[in-house]
Length: 362
Image (cartoon, rainbow, N blue to C red; front, side, top):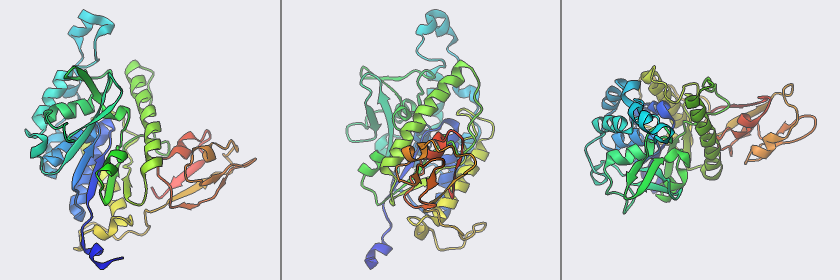
């Protein structure tokens, strides 16, 4: 390596994915990055990631964010559209009142325009009329109030009314891209640190209840997972450091223990950033209390198949983009026990009908 390259800090884009209240893990990730001395030069946020990202880009300190988020109550965001239900019935645009949600966002977010933020910030939303995606904060897309941009990025379909602007309607960017790596790469950074909060089959999934709201949420999450798998397949490489906090056991709108969710994000970020080849050399040299040297690198994923549970269906080979499996009869085989090419999309494990595949070192 050329000597001067070791001295220059890489340009880092931080990508904060969507995931409802699981997004409080983003605060823990930011806390870990600050403790380790790893800086970012731009933030890209989707849905809840846009809310946390806007706060960070606005210069909020970690204690400020923790204080604001710790007071969040479910009732502040979710107030049923009783009057509209009575007047319009099924023609009502959403289950809950978007104005209540927007008012709360206005109390939390910095009173700043995109140009006033401490670091460049972008968040995505979907234009319902065309199905196209927009990234607020891009040139020509900065004249929108920050609160409206974040509201549109967080506005889940059927839950809150879409943002209406200039004759178009905008909703949650996670509908089409819950972790916008392709956009982050277009900013031409040296390194991308991305936080993925989509539910994975290798972790415990939330309890499903046979109700209209939970069915809608779960259907949205399944589509989100599949789309995210494709994004990870296409865009995770040696320049993308992927952090996947173990928060999949939480429901999308679980407000019970926000601080614990943040702790899980901090724990996952420390584990990855201290050991990943792309970031471990960026960690500050001072000794930090409570941190130990990593024992196992996080550059690869261990892959195993339970021979008793495997039925030889071959789906593992179909789903894996890195050819880690060889389909056979009566059993499948693992070709890469330590898979350095793994994109950590969990597609093989999530689609295995007998849960025979186990992934490790995640």
